Image (tube, rainbow, N blue to C red):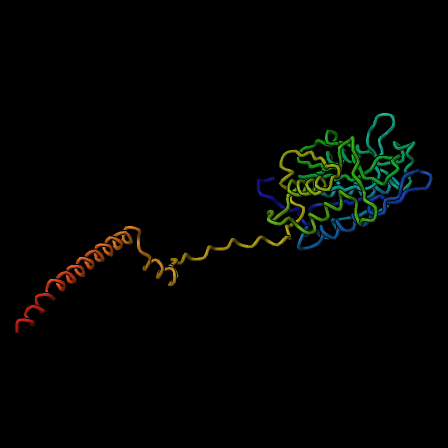
Length: 321
């Protein structure tokens, strides 16, 4: 695959979405009501022309298969027909074989005491990935272990089991933890996060949502909610495959800064600045005022003195006449 991110080919790809939500009463496995809505939501997204754009005939769903044979009848034709991308999704109970620990995928007739004969072995998936002509293979597992009281979804760490070239394996939780299926919610925790990313897009994300972008967003959402973090194994350029277009609205363009306008002082401030004397000017006017006052005093005093001297002389002249 080239470095450019590419969508799944709408006609030459094959997708199989398997959801096991109901189980026999004798199996001891809890029904998983949120599995079927997740399968249906994923299919709607993948065939939506605005998102995945797949032809409806190449995206198949299988809900509540009764037996492993029913799964095989849907799985192997997808393996043989895929040329561009082969995507396999499973949600349900994951059962480890009690003898060798190998993961098996439960169906309605699964007997937990006989998982090797009544559940789908993960080896089927591995063999299909090896035999397909598809250039890219994707496996997404959202499944739980048997015997758990609470309704959970979990996945064994099968990354090492599915190590074919051009593959991308995404699992809901590591081997030692379980991914919760919250009561009252429409989807399992993992598939709900996946549906949210694929259906709503990633704000400020790339135009096409490649697998790594999807995985990181799903993981961030689950970790933020204190739920188990999913794990991934990728090989070659499989991470460059895009499942859907990004339908999130693009961020608004950055605003241009307003033009700078020179700031002029207000008239009041300008007037205040204009009339306010500087300290030096004030001091200079003080000295001038003092000198003027002194001179005025001297002048007045001189005038008084002259008047005093002249008045007796005038009187003497008046008397002599």
